[in-house]
Length: 138
Image 1 (tube, rainbow, N blue to C red):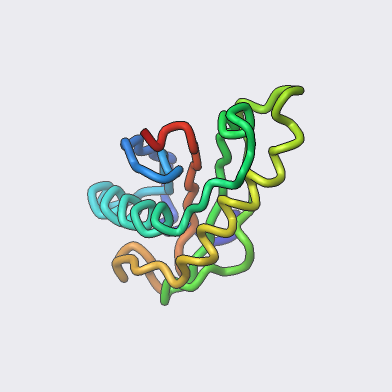
Image 2 (cartoon, rainbow, N blue to C red):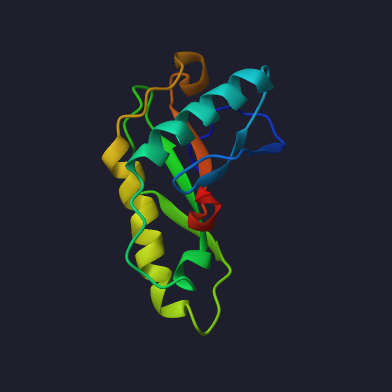
């Protein structure tokens, strides 16, 4: 991890009943965990509107994809988001893992730039994780 929203740790994970695939966000926090929570919820809200579930079987939609997203100080996505992990992959749905990852990455790229508070982004931007879980869409 080369860009961090803060220098301190630990990592916080926020779970929310978010629609359209984004179910969890996390980031490093320091002075104001509430600011981080609000900024990450804002990022997830923006990205979930851009998420398009690919045409895959029900088994494919069981794949949960976690991305690491880096943004610049102005909210632009710095490079492609990286797949950190995919959970729920098994022999039946493994052929869909790539499409599920591509759908998550595409959602982040379509929504750029992300409108996040300047205090969260700071001068060098921020890095955080977004987790996409299509079955959590409700």
